[in-house]
Length: 258
Image (cartoon, rainbow, N blue to C red):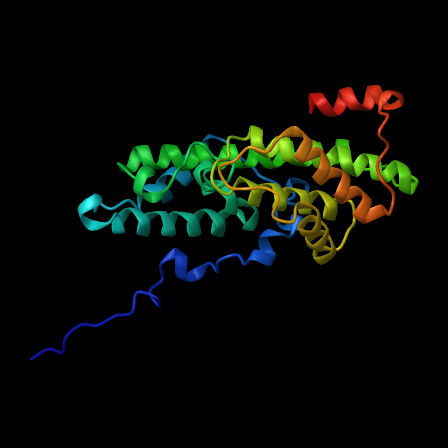
């Protein structure tokens, strides 16, 4: 009699077994996501190839509510690993849905977004491109809002306060819902490290400034956002930001258009 076949799914060559999950510290590292450090070549051939990779992991029969969407969630795990394996760690956020505090609208979750092979592949492609576009726009905002290298502490304080206010607003405008303040914290940390600050120092500065004042599913008042910006700037420079912005009207207008 033949012995029973046994296997451990955690050791099979599934994509999720080949690609490690990113840690919280990894996600806080702007260098891992900065588009300038991670070129992205995209054309019709590449799109067709990605679609074929995605289609291969869509179950022929979906689990649905009766099966607690196990097949759909498993598919999402394999596709996520496939995307990160092919494009690199910067692609992590392709599935960071607005429902979970992210900026992505083209993908919600495995349970909601995995359907037919063609529809699922369409959503993955759209979500990946949406994430890449969001990263590139975010990088441009960082460059436009960064304090000049020779800025005085007082001038740097003003730049940091304005950047904080704009970037928190940028997060709210992305459509993020539950956990939006997590995205705001990550983006602010990315901005500070993009100016040359150490990752750990940036994380502490953001945590000290926000201090639990933002809540999930609650859009903060403008005054609270500005207070957080002032606290962040003062905490990093030792100087409160200028209250009179008239002399910087042109720069204010540039930041408002970003």
